[in-house]
Image (cartoon, rainbow, N blue to C red):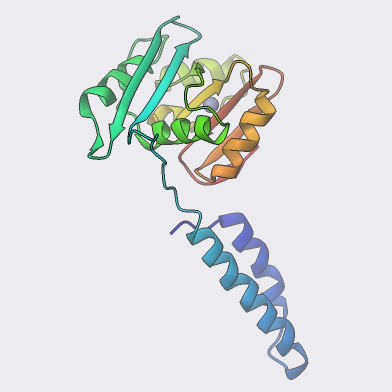
Length: 202
Ligand SMILES: [Zn+2]
């Protein structure tokens, strides 16, 4: 079960401020109900990747830095395909240093479900940035690219994308609705960062 940290935290200050007097009882009951409903709602938001009608999970990727194209079935009813995961890991290597890191496969499910949510699982996704070595992350950070010091790109849990033909704000909204992790919208550079870390957005 995933608990949305900010929504839970936002309920607490008020409940702490209420003392246990009979006058406050209705409000305390209401807060308890709201809190419990929140937990149930978030339990229902657990990721359930949806396969295509043939039971497969596919990705169609174009890398903006290497120019490489990858059309791949990385998962089926039996689970993730290790060879496909290895190809994806290589594909999403740090394009500056060529170092490869094992990706969290939930990132692939997130991308797959994102195209489905946008109404077309065959959509091509432009990869702006995949895995980043600490060296690359620090290089970008010190050159004013708005990169976080502890970016999840360094754990291969994040990817920056855009989808040709789909407004990037629409990609952001679809990613937010999936509730899978972090979503960052970079309007000026026209891309969306998605990761499978804590649910948050910026
Ligand atoms: Zn990013």
